[in-house]
Length: 265
Image 1 (cartoon, rainbow, N blue to C red):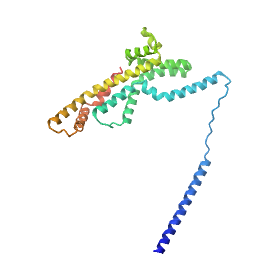
Image 2: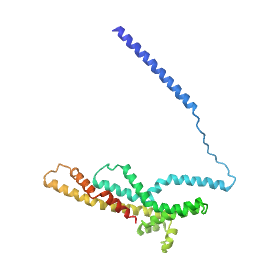
Image 3: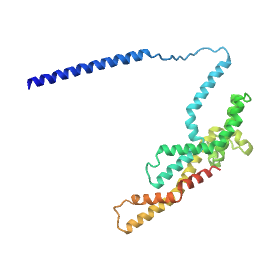
Image 4: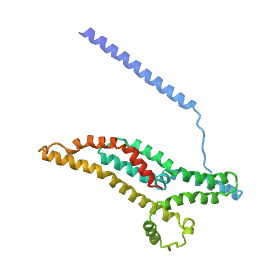
């Protein structure tokens, strides 16, 4: 037993030395690899510019970076995305499937439907603002104002007059009586919040209409189980297959998505 224990200890000692050597060698390889990689340098200088055009170019770059940073908020709050994603979540909740379809799929569907709805607006922005700006016909400020007009027109067509009046009163601004001047004179900081609460209202109305047939199924299943004395059986478990069957037989996705897109007309 002593000889066997000595041989085991010797083997453990040899393996420990090998492992330590591998670790040391690996660290040396990592260190040499890190030292051999040359990283580019980046500096930010605050210096006096010689001409105003240099300052203007810097400010334009900052403006573009700001727009890129705010792009997700613009996509969510100033397009049809808000109403679509609310309606899709109500569909999933009404059927009773907790995670099916997953959030990633719902967001993907909402994004592509948003691109479909907003494609005429994007075309107008490209035709009226982007292409003239690239050709030098419009300045940056003029192109920005021209590009905002289609978006403002879309939001105003989807916004209730009551919501616009609410924010006009809060901002202390007078109501614009001339309808031909509303698009040009209505400030953007009034249109955006009015559009958001109008979209929230429309999304909840659509969600309520979606819930009605599925609530009827739940009530029928619950009454049937109560009459049969099966009070311990969860009604949601029994009604879920019937709600899915109803949704499939009615071609629910085609019906709801089609009617949802018609609301933007």
